[in-house]
Image (cartoon, rainbow, N blue to C red; front, side, top):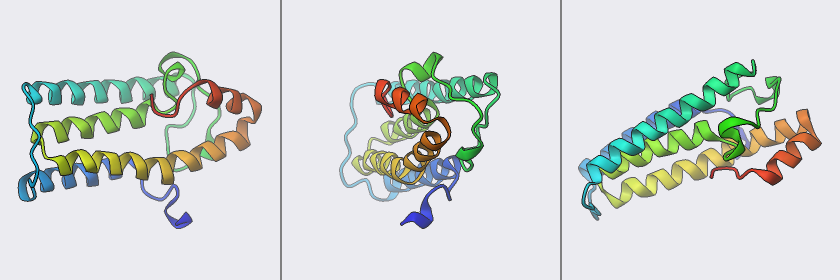
Length: 153
């Protein structure tokens, strides 16, 4: 399983899961769970996800550290202010909200389950390896940050 760690770019993973959500919504809508205003909620989730991810990227740029998730060892600064005071992974949280918005639009239970699968996969094969690299690079500073701020929200 270690072969998958840091191997799939998160944006590619979002694309794969977005296609999966669209496909199960159209072709396998076994259980539909629409709710009043689900399309408005979908649009709000997509917008919030894009905004959250963008803010995360901008804060990394401002700190002059890499936004390349495939090379966490190249991180030059630990960003713990701004949006990073509430989530250690606002970019990934934004991606999850984007997918959740897609699932809400189609309202298929399988779409929601794919969002959960995305979060699990990203945590296991991207976030945990990133956290190991950050701990190696920043030691106690990262350990204290990790104890203070939740991984997702």
